[in-house]
Length: 222
Image (cartoon, rainbow, N blue to C red; front, side, top):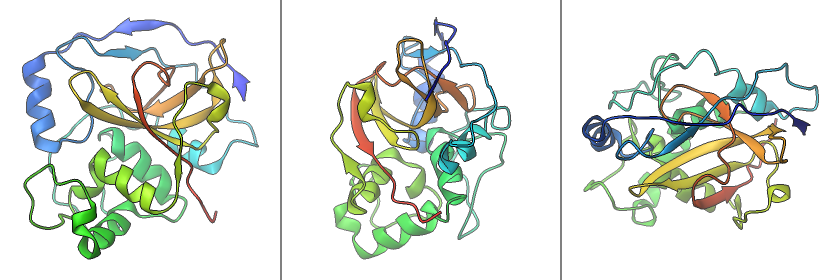
């Protein structure tokens, strides 16, 4: 991995009322909690090396394209449905990147939930799957990843995380979040994360900024 210095930590002040309203709408991931959750400055965007995993390249290409965090519920086409490219939430970074590798999480999660609905979190008062939103919720993705055998043991050792791995966190206020491990690191050697925590897709030093709730290594055919 190449070592690229990040520009430090900035505190993002956001309104709790707006945040909670957004979370009720989507309940997937968020940009802050009560104005106190940290978002770290994006790393410089140098050209990726030829050895960069395709999943990381696909995630990094969203930087500068997805510039908004928008958790609105949207009725999507099926399969391969998506919200407009200029917006999304943390899960959309992963959905779009994996889709370039032949995995449509909308279809995959929906079909698995139809067959095994009781195996998925029962957090939203639903009686059955909803193909418009299920794949955009972090807890559902965690369940699907685990059911594919992608789970790894979370640690606080940077060497345990490879470029292309998926990581989930719990932000302040019990708010789930997800991102993709990149092939760039901070000066301290911590892998940077491609994610959307509230200001569009960025590559930032947040791997150990919040409690890690899941670590997954996708098995990809491409």
